[in-house]
Image 1 (tube, rainbow, N blue to C red):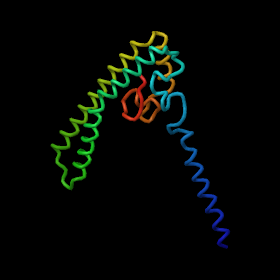
Image 2 (image 1 turned 30 degrees about the vertical axis):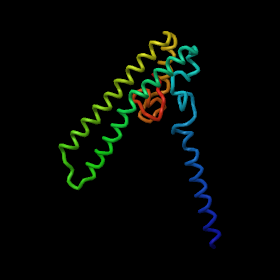
Image 3 (image 1 turned 45 degrees about the horizontal axis):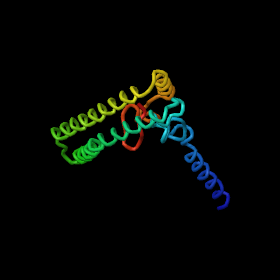
Image 4 (image 1 turned 90 degrees about the horizontal axis):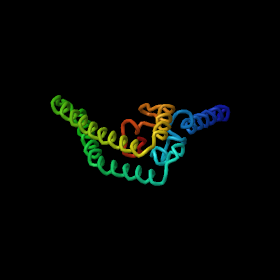
Length: 162
């Protein structure tokens, strides 16, 4: 009788494991044209970038990362402060609102620098390459969890598509 109950349990566990192991293929971030290193415009094969363009874009990206690193660090600290403020038994409204304002300011500064980067990259590209890039971006979407999340909002661990 134990074997009769044990076998369906094992099959169920294996089925759940296989479903979660394959879930990445159906909607999570996974391999594809716009994932990983390909998020850097210099790595997009369809743009047919010259070596000079790749070097310029890589240099612009490195500058962006260097310029935004202190802002991202401050943003991380402020997020931690905000979390601790909310965890207080009696949260202080003034402190929470002030911290949220600081977070918005830091995000705005990062977005401004990211926009400057994107505009600089577009100046490096030819009109045809810009058109191709725009087509790629619109085909793939840019939802908050989409493959082009960094394209619109910036994220430290990912590379940029201008």
